Length: 374
Ligand code: PLP
Image (cartoon, rainbow, N blue to C red; front, side, top):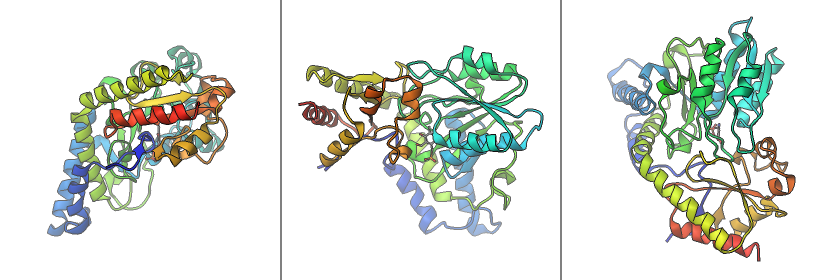
């Protein structure tokens, strides 16, 4: 029997068992360096090529447009910092106030290196408006980077509309799709994005591996200097086992996407119904258009940090906001950007359900929250 309830799937997910099985041969038997020319490396090389093809198919790209990285943080840093190195006469980046710190901190570095960065506001649901982008974009804008889905509140942006505005001004468009890939349908051609970041551990793949999609013809300097791997764009011996695990997990998630989403929306509704039945007053943050299972709940006058620890003692794992930020006790920048009153912001937890969660799990979460309101 399960001893605990894991409800922090926006922070990371459990490795898919098929992905684990697919990885094993490349750790134990087929451990050759995929870039070596001899026959022992052939299987690893083939697995690398197949994984690239598989991943590309899952997002509507071509294999040559997929560059493997160490995860979402690296992909985001690459996309943002490349703006500093290219086109000296276009030195402006536009991003949003609710981006993950992988984007925000990279933007700070870009600012230190002479770029101007503008941060778009969002509405109370966390939506970036096309009008706000139209108002501040100009011929100086080199890159617009807006996340596809927010990690704290789950809000999904209208990326295609924002891309249209960026392109009309000759700017490139990057999206941090770390919370979206493997969870909602994505077709890079339909969206029109020039770059897209993804991370395997958010879609039941292994940790420490991800990719950056770069549309053919997009001017992008190499990020990691060294060997000639990844067409000379990202040096470093390929992490074949993790890449195979990532491709397997993504394929599995994409194939089950519709069913998983249905299951998660049902669980979400169940949890909210139970809270209402038990007359626990709460505010749900975010938008109707959100990542399945991402539930940001604010309890007026409560302390989110204390709720997290009390739930922890009951074997229930949730987050107070951004996982990478749990050391930081300040009100999250995302909750500030949606102008959530401080009393609510401080009493916020994120329950992020995944495909392994059950109706019994959400019932236990509701019972536990009721105890904290007794
Ligand atoms: N971007 C978003 C939206 C995220 O949620 C995360 C992880 O929490 C990252 C980037 C960083 O990804 P990684 O953990 O693969 O470095």
